[in-house]
Image (cartoon, rainbow, N blue to C red):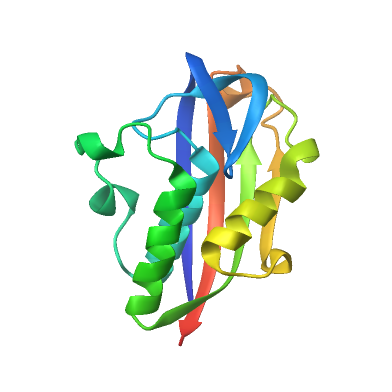
Length: 157
């Protein structure tokens, strides 16, 4: 068994759609990023890659690659899931915490878990998504962006 952690943070960016865990948040300001800015999926990707010691999201999907401009991060996670399997590992579970003052995450958690679990090839009960705030402390507390921490467990296949 091996554990990996992932952390990502993106600032809000006007004119972008907010996507977290593959779920679009209608009417909410999106996040800056070369791809779709899905900070939740990016942290999960880093956690899974880290557990298998396969680098990080930037080494596999560099922001200098114009083909990835606006990419669907769930598609990137599907590619990472295949990389993990090719390296001889199976993903056991993922736990992620979204850190944001707004928007409300709870109404979307079930759908985020479903989309992430499908991309990871896991049962929904093996994917946890939860949220917290910073009680208005720091950049996240001032509403400047969203951060996510994720942990993944993998085992030899």
